[in-house]
Image (spheres, rainbow, N blue to C red):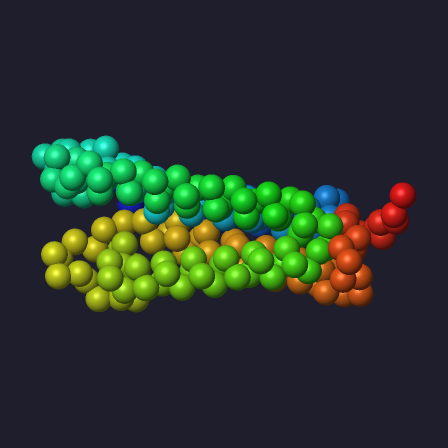
Amino acid sequence: MDQATVGAVWAATCIAAVVALALAARRIGRLNAAAWMLAVAALLLAGEDPWQLVFMASTPVSNTDDGVLGLVKAHTLAHMVGGAGMSVAGLVLAVWVAHTGLRRAQRWAWWALLTVLLIVGGTDTYELTIYPHGLPLFPTPSDGNRGFGWPSLVAGFAAWALALGFSYGPVFRSGDQGGQGIQGGQKRTRR
């Protein structure tokens, strides 16, 4: 199997997990399901940009067209690895927000996760116009290589958006802006 096929199978597997979470929502609660959907989305997205930055920075140009080790200065390599680390940290923080604030129906968490989706999704949409990763909606780059990786990007953003859509009702219907909200279908009380 080539890399494009492996990436497409991985994305399809993750989307199947998101669908399974949606189907299990009655049993585990919509907000819990949404938090786990967001974790799946973060896993998909971490496998694209952060992983690719580390791969490119640590692979010699002689091994692959995408490797830059030996081609760029150490300063550039450090920024590539640092950028990958910051991206992963941001994804981990988003998953933490989903598993704490969003699961408690806290509106700030929903808005924060939407903001991250819009910022990251916007930059990656721009990235797809520069290099479409094989996505047929955009023209082939000047190097003639369509690449691969678009299924993970599209599936990651779709899973993130689905998690927000799935959690919208419980978060905004609760009528409680203080954050106690609804979790697992039951009203929580303060102790």
